[in-house]
Length: 172
Image (cartoon, rainbow, N blue to C red; front, top):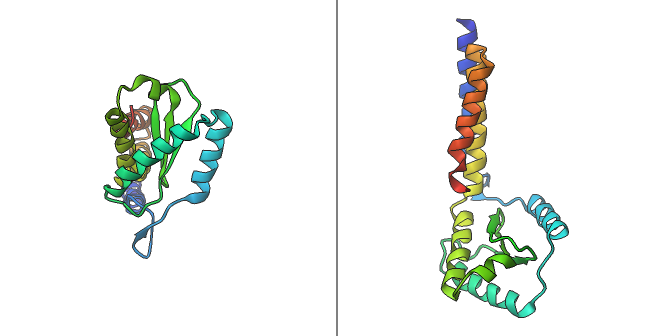
């Protein structure tokens, strides 16, 4: 019985700590510039930038128009064209949006490119990264709590896999 009470108290405390979907200071969302800068640098070193000033200016112009009409028009966004043949685009916290050159070869119109960029802007403005991080912490707490209460490693594994499945909704 004491084990159950202890696990419920620990679970409640951990869930309360993980309850916020964004990091705030004075009620304002705060970015993680150091971490984002580190991730950006790793991407540039590993993948490389596709050097085409005219194409980059075109992407920046489309992105700027979309950001101006987003829910965060004052947020600084950076659009980076990566030298990768993969058909992909993605966003990182802090307004960093990446588009692979392979995706550009696949698209048929400016409208399709704008749709991709708008989708990535949406990940940032809706704070999907923060929500995913919070859900991940909450799922870990649930899995550990299941293990504490039951002592079953299998239940821990099942809870962990279920939690991973739940948060994959923002990705593929």
